[in-house]
Image (tube, rainbow, N blue to C red):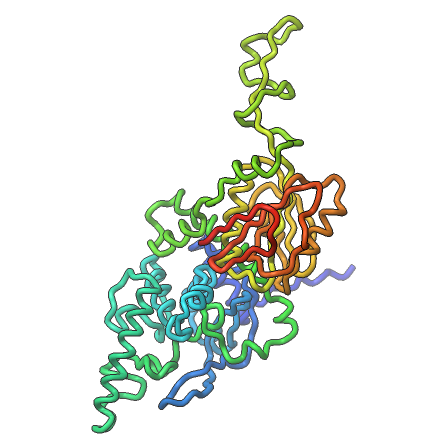
Length: 456
């Protein structure tokens, strides 16, 4: 019998190098793992970025890495081959942090200059990684000291410092324009020229990490169908970030003092407590209850009291009732349409966590844009987050059409949404509806039901 040959894994190709680098990042920082492995690698010939030179916008090509807001890790094979393994580890951690920290959402919410905020975010991330003992990085990256800034600031603080620095550089250039150039192209007094976005140290550019950092690359619109199929919806991306925040918080609890302060602050804000008193709202929304869980509102004999053994088990023994609290059956519908950004979905998941903790039992969860997705029985917010799909238009009609067909129906339907869509003209019969309106600009889609507005 012929012996079956064993195939050996190619340990010399770029794919293996990428796999090893990702494994090293996940081993060094396990809390990066969920985001890192969720990013789908997409190889392109060149990274194309829009830059400004001599006051004119143009497109340049380079060999580097970038990340999209839909979770694609874009890279060129030359960058993968040229960088050392340690350099690659640093870059992967860098791009992972752009996704974790929601830089596109922050830049859009605050109305920041996308390219300049990308640089501010780069400074912050590199500073955080350096504080975390990530010690081997590519030569052409930026630091706080690149423009004379202090270490340990936030990305927003670096952004405002960069705005001030850019204005100072422009003033110097205007004063010297009549005298002719007196410094290297792309520099002002030895510092990278912020008025010429794209010019940077050693002739390479930073501040062009892609839409995942708030500054889209020019070739993000030219990706293959295979790459497009791997893109993730905003709901999926937010679920990934929530999971990463949970893992980071767990790491902080087990290894205090080992995480840079910026990451600790992000995890604390991401996992902040729910702002809605769900127990009170559920009690108000439904007077009848079909389930009972441990609580302190009434007595029932359906379960054994924890001190029953002290009274005996015989036929003449006193039977102790158990204190319970009524809990209605709840269906949680999460709006995953395109209008629900990272901030709105983050609030929805935070409140979902509070809802699960209040219910102490499974909740039926469904995600919906203009169509209904699969109903899933979930025990906690993590399971709920994994079930979210969508990204299209918005309509609330499918939610109530589905519930009207259910038998039995839930007692309460909670709809987490920004309110940007059509709803039925009148309230449904047989169950109560709570509209959880998330985000600063949310609006009520109708005049019936309970309306709870929750900002960030």
